[in-house]
Image (cartoon, rainbow, N blue to C red):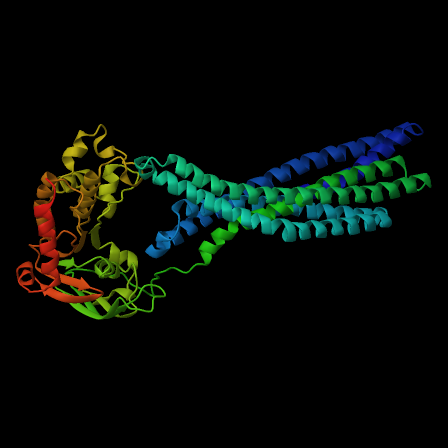
Amino acid sequence: MLASTLADVLTPLYSGRLVDAVARAAAVKTIGWDAALAAFSLLIALGFGAIVTRHVAYIGINGLTMKMMSDIGNNAFHRVQRFSTDWHANSFAGSTVRKISRGMWALDLLNYAILVELFRSLIMLIGLTVLFGWYRPVLGLIIGCGSLIYVALTVALSLGYVAPAASLANTWDTRLGGSLADAISCNAVVKGFGAEAREDERLAKVIAKWRHRTRRTWVRGTVNGTAQGIMLVALRGAVLGHALLLWSRGQASPGDIAFVLTSFFVLQGYLRDVGMHVRNVQRSVNEMEELVDIQSQAFGIADCPGAKSIRITKGRIDFDNVQFHYGTDRVRLYNDLSVSIKAGERVGLVGPSGSGKTTFIKLIQRLHDASGGRILIDGQDISKVTQASLRSQIAIVQQESILFHRSLSENIAYGRPGASQVEVEEAARLAGAHEFIARLPKGYGTLVGERGVKLSGGERQRVAIARAFLANAPILILDEATSSLDSESEVLIRKAMERLIAGRTTLVIAHRLSTVRALDRLLVFDRGRIIEEGDHAALIRLDGGIYRLLFERQALELNTGPV
């Protein structure tokens, strides 16, 4: 790029010499022709040299920029994937995607503005200032000082006047993306309540704010451009006026005037674009701010230095004086909670909403870190092992099954990607999913839609159960895994799940107490404490017990409910 720009710097010099050679040709034709031919040859050589070197530069910069964009995208995705569940719960997926994609493309603009345009402008400014200083010192002084003043004012306007408005406009651009994604991803709810007009109004308010902020940024950019144009006209007057003064005194030849004119108009083109490129640099910086913010955020849950992979063979779980509170909450949910779950034991977690059942599961998965105490699996402290190795050996079927917009085979094999098609189909049979999958036009190759929306709730649940079958993990977590199934499917699934949980440590979060009657032990939670413990038969006999109260209430609702 340096070489190609130097070729542009020298072009006006040889253009001036070509004009002088033509002017002299009337007096001494042979000498004039030789000088003109020499200047012409050098101009052609400089033109080709600039093209070749610029081509090489662009190829290199393209490769560099694509590598940087890829690395930034991969790194941002890596971090976002490892942020805590709380971070994801408090973030719009659409906004996060917008931040990453906009930051990646902002780097492309940044590299082009700095490595290509501003660098070339800098070389052109220095080169012509030196050339003019050697050729006409006063012109060199005018060019150098005028250009420095122009660049300084341009940078000041861009950073102090345009940039603050651009940063605010980008914030509203992110909000717009989040609002669009939120409404579109929940379109089924919108249609269910006939709320299309209401969502139109809601988005219109966001767009109005975005339009106002963005228009202000554009207006400030226009004002900045006008100010730069005025400064360029003033610089043009100074340079050309001095050149004409020299010519009027007989101190400049026609070639000198051609040299000055050509040089200034080349320089003016570069300087005019300096403002645009400075604005592009600032714009790209503004657009990367939110991506940089993602990079600066600490992981909610981080592996400790030197963490090793955990190896779960039996699946014994021990809570040893565990303390836990959410975020900045001063009140602890768990206060010295201690409980042991034997290897292969089937345990139900029972209690009213907010009692601590789900938190218990999340602590085992290390989706949260305990505030005190230890959680051990097979005697290994889970806070000292890698999260990936821990979670890969715990299979979970959630109450709300989430699937990828991928094929059914890929979704079922997600817990064990190397599984064969035969193993995938066997897992589907165990989960009662094979029959409905086989009826689909593309069978196991069917794409299920975003979050699995092309399947019914029961079908999604059975695919998630098949995924847990195939994972074959020593610890199994079921968050009311049969809640979305019809009665006929539920009977089939229960039998299959009895085979699945045999010999595995199984934790079942129970909302319908009829699902936990056959489990080995039930832990009854209330406000972060285990207040009752035992099997169904023992707990149902406790007078005034919470489990008995919950069970009787559900039985009464079942018996008196509508037919």
